[in-house]
Image (cartoon, rainbow over all chains, first blue to last red; front, side, top):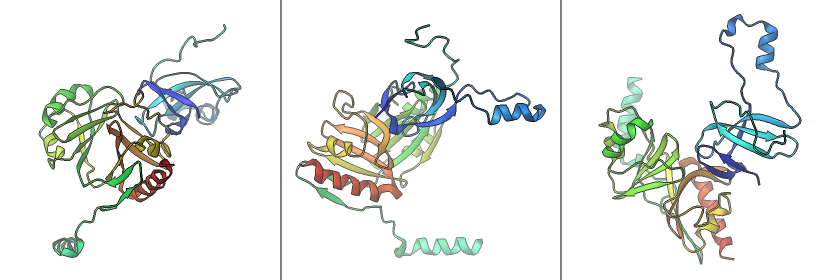
Length: 98
Length: 194
């Protein structure tokens, strides 16, 4: 079983307590009514779906119930790091070679 | 509408609608562990920002814990840390924590959940093994010491777990899940002995 570190509970918890909540860092347009259909489609439906490192929202639903962000590798399913919701995308990942 | 209200009132007055707690009096004794439904208690779900904690702690008569996975107990009342701004307060001495919070003017939300939850005691040398049959958390004394509390899952049901002693736990679950939780714990208790 995967252990995921919850930044609010400050420890690793079993994956069964968590739920994925889609890609992170998707900013809602400030004036959504003025968006063109193409831009709205990009914001609403189109996701990066990379092979490799992905930034995701996760929720510790059966714990502190908080949303937080996680960096995960979609190939190995390894959680690189987690950080609190609202914090900026980390510039440098721990253990990154470059 | 008025008619319905009058009807409810009349029904409430008759003895036939006496409140029957879920799982009332169910006990299971295995060689190394005893699973038992706890008597009814007063409970509230409390949400409050950091600035209100001092006033709420004073009104409740205990210091609300701010560290994850901890609890505070005083005079039969226990406050369990559930989230950064969320606590569950259980009062087994018969005093209503909701009334205490009502006097506080600082921003907070206190909701009475006394009848929403059922408390189950799991006690004995195999208590941790019994709960671990459905709960994935590390329940060793190093990771989950006496007084530790956490919302987690047991099988398919969400529970709130409190370690009241080295070999005793309090499992709080929603009333409608209580039969499932008790049955799962009973089966596990019988297995834990082997």
